[in-house]
Image (cartoon, rainbow over all chains, first blue to last red; front, side, top):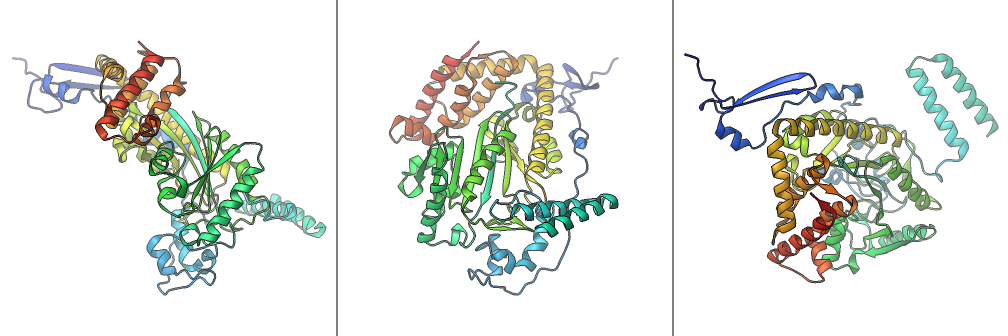
Length: 167
Length: 333
């Protein structure tokens, strides 16, 4: 006698539905009973592994480092806010708190952010065009050194020197 | 409606003025001075902006603006002198004295992160011209919370993900995305059970990446999710064709005929109608009008439009009428 195939879902009742899906070349089969098909409404088709699909992004480097957090209370000289209040709420009192609580904030920043060095936009009023250009060259040189492209680094150093001399 | 996966794109920049405490600790005089600074900077623009002070708003008006994503809950319930400065098209909103002195955002329909950034960057240049912005060469723009320091930038896309949700693949997809420093959260409700299958995808980190890096990363995450969503929608139809089509047509029936609709049921049926348009079971002549239903049918906007306060039962009746009017006029079988 041929044995009746049981439902893949409950394993109790005989399967009366057969589903076959071919998605991205992967075949999946499901045997379900009347009850389980009704209960689920939509049957879960097999889906590709998202981990593989996302590998196109490359491997992101997280700038994580550990440093002991100072437990003693520091007070911001500008606004009077305390480092203990920051540790409790996660918020700072004023822009100067960043400098005042440096020893407390930096270790946390390393964990929560990509890096502890700003590489984006700066306000127009903050740098003169020469300063902005100098900083960009400096950044490019750091990157060149990191890549061990010393020829480019030397060239950039020359440009920086010329800029400083002319400024 | 293109493929109706990415509903809208939003970029916001957080900024603070140097020499002032952050809004949570700011006295009334300084709060008012900051509002004035921002408003007068934006008044120089060729675009027309209007200012809405939280203290002048009724609770209902505040809630309605929140439902339209023009202001946040923190703005409504934080600093007494908070305000929102909004352009005529309602796509640029500058919140003043929220968590930071300035939270400027541009929100555009569809997949347009680059354009949203360019527009809000112009607004940022306008505000910072002639004002000293809190900035540190090493840490970038200084913000009240170190999670925003650096670029102060959050780029996000509102995504409609019924395929991934109904095929139970969303969690998998979210885990994959979170490995690339992205955050995915339900737009309405919590976690993976977001009502209407609407999810916000945004960058987690703001320091150590340039604005272009952030735009590129979020865009590639959004593209990958979109691709997977389309695969999932195809798989859903292939494995459950009749059940899916039946659910969509029933939802269309309810949306055009119901006498009362709760917010939850509305979101559920609305998502199915939207999916029906994608599959071509339903035809939509005006996607913008259809999409606007989501915020128009939220409680405060319903009451504001009706010009009166309503209890939940009255709102459900009003919502059903609105849904029926709009869907009957722009969606056909």
